[in-house]
Amino acid sequence: MTDGLTAIYPGTFDPVTNGHLDIIERAARHVARLVVAVSQNPSKTPLFSLEERIALAKEVTASIEHVEVDSFDGLLVEYAGRKGAKVLIKGLRAVSDFEYEMQMAQMNVRLAEVETLFMVASPRHSFLSSSLVKEVARLGGDVEGLVPPEVARRMKERFRGD
Image (cartoon, rainbow, N blue to C red; front, side):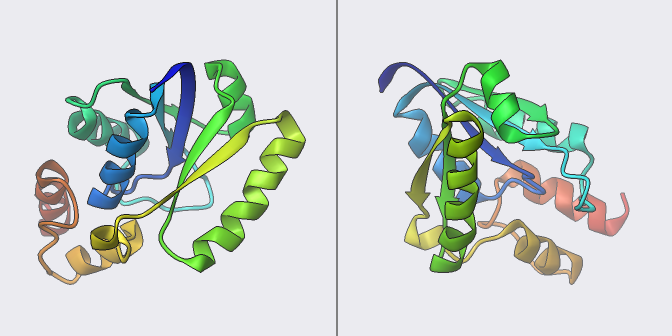
């Protein structure tokens, strides 16, 4: 762990997957404080409301030391400044993720000297995306093992209309 280092792991987390949770667990071991920052991205139409995504993220990270869950809108680097963070954590599943994330990382350094640390997805989670998980659930498939149990239950309720 790096003494005093605050890092931010941003995302829409709609829903939080086991891949997200893996990155959170691994990143939290290396920082004094990891803020899981749930985005209010207005360009996306989420399955779960911001409040639901925050609640689910808090529930699945409750037992992980050094982790807190918050939300933000606007520029990520401005949010990072308010949180006292100079480091962002980003998970990479494939080369295509890197191309986009590299541009964002360079812009964040340019805007506010905020660095990005890339973490490679564990092989068992490298195929996972929230979009893919939602599609499986929407079509009645089983998402157990793809998302934490609490999230699987909520997805099942959402698609059944409970």
